Structures are given as C-alpha cells and as structure tokens.
Length: 398
Image (cartoon, rainbow, N blue to C red):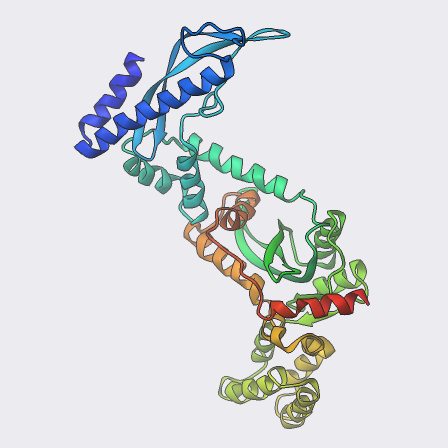
C-alpha cells in the first residue's frame, strides 16, 4: 500500500488543492463502499458475530484506480467466503479483479476512439485529463477490443421481434490496410424502421466488393437472424444489391434513391446544362402525385432525348423503382425517396475515419461505425410521417 500511496501523493502534490481534496474524498467513498459490499456478502460487519455469517475478513490489498479525478490509491478489503465446496476468495463486483480504471474512464476511451482520435493522441490527451493516471497503449487496445466484442455480440442478436417495416441499404468505401497494402473496401449497412417510426441500425459488415454475392450474404445473414421481409427496401440501385434482393426477397417493393440517380444523370450531363436537367428531374421526383410524375417523365424524355441521350437512358434504367414511394402515405414521401437515413450513419463514419487516414484493419472500420451508435454519438430519430405507419402495416397484413 505504501508504494501506491506514494505514487498517488506525488501526483497530488502537483494538483490544485480542490482536485487533491476531492481525490482524498473519492478514496474514502470508494473504500467505504467496498467495506459495505463485503459486509453484505459475509452477512456481518467487522468484528460482528452472527449466526448468518458465512465468511471472514483477512486484511486489505492496495490498488490504484484511475478515475476522472486522476489516480486514486485505495485499500481493497479481502474476504474468505465459506461455500458448500469449501472456502474461496471474495471478488468485488464494484471493483472487479484486475480493474485499474473506473467505467467512466473506459467509456471516455471508447468515445474518443469512435470520435476519430488515434491511440497515440488519445493516450496523450487522457494522461492530462486524468491527472497523470496510467493509460498505456495496451490499455487502450483492451478497451477497444471490448468494444469489438460487443459488436460481434450485437451482430448475433435476434431481429425477429423488432417489427421492422422499412429497410434502408447502402455502402460506403473506406481505405483499410490488408496484408500491408492499402485497399478501398465497402462497408455495407442496413437501417430498419420500426412500427413506431424509430430508425435502428440493423447490421454493418465489410466485404471485398458490392457484388450480388456480397449483398446476398449480407441479406441472408439478416434473414437468418429473424428479420422478416419488409414492406419496402430503399437502396442506391447498385446491380449487386438488386440481384441479391431479387434472390433473397423476390418481389419485394424497392425504392431507388432519387439522389443517387441524380448523381448518375450528372455523369452524362455537360456542366452548363445540369441546372436545367436537374430542374426537370425534380419535377418528376417531387411531383404531387404519380400521374403528374409520369407526365413530367415524358416531358423530360422529349426535351433531352436528342441532345442528351445518355442522360435519358440513365433515367430509364431506374424504371418504376424511382416512383415506388407514391404507393405509401404522402407524409412519408420525403423519407422514402432517398437513402438519407443511412447516409447519416455513413457520413458520420467518414468524418471520424478520415482523421486516421488508412485504418489498421477491417475490424477497426465496423468498430468505429458501431461505436458511434453504441456510445450515443450518433442518434437515429423517427421517420417523418411515422403516425401513418399503421396504414402500411394494415395493408401489408391484408
């Protein structure tokens, strides 16, 4: 205990008086809580002799715990419990064996990591914030490994009871180090809309490409975990995704993201004509009803068919899937026209990931994205028009 106390005292000597005083109070509170925890387990207080007692104390063990106030040296009480199989050493639930940091500190480590702070800068920042408390590279790695384990468990959870109505599917490409070489890989993501309108992240996974096989595996894993066939899928229109949907959920209604399609049109459109093409395109996808949208489509084809045939061909490629949203309540059209619900996850991920350049491995990609939601840094809200989801559910049931 002497060595731990000297280490803490040396830190406190350079701290401001208020922090030092609070650290002393924290030591007292923690030791009191540990003694009370042990008393409950033993069935009696110190020196108390009762018939319900089933164990005894035997000294203390020195521990230094890193808290938000810095390192705090505590004397952890020890106890021996009498069990049917013999005596065994008591283990505190408040301060588990080998724990050297408060849970709030670990939460801060995870939060900073998911915010895009690399390990070196994270360690340097927290050593200052925690009053010189020890935060080694391996400690950061262990905390991140814990988040990765949570992600793996999250990917196995049952989805059958969620009541998913709509599913958004999209992917983002990130630079990942694979066998010491940089490679851009797609992270495929799924966001579901529940019966009450709340959006939830369903899955995240890294694949080698956006092929039909990759998207098929992604969807099959979702269905294997109990995800039912949704009333509508909103996607970016990639060929691999369309092929996978046709195989896994044949006949499911699909809405082609109108923003992605506009980007496709822009690829074939001269810059000087783009504002006019965009305005005519908006008359289609923002029409007040489907007949009006189809009339606007015919006008678009008639106006640009000769001058920009590739633009018209690209529009025709989308087919009826560009206007599927008209089959749903008007209050939800804004939400169902695009994959913006999932783009939010993707854009937040990009903002965090770009600070690290090339990510060290595939696991780091999904850990950061999952961590944004798990730590509350990214909160998904309800969709517009969620009050009308009952109409969709009734129609689907019929």
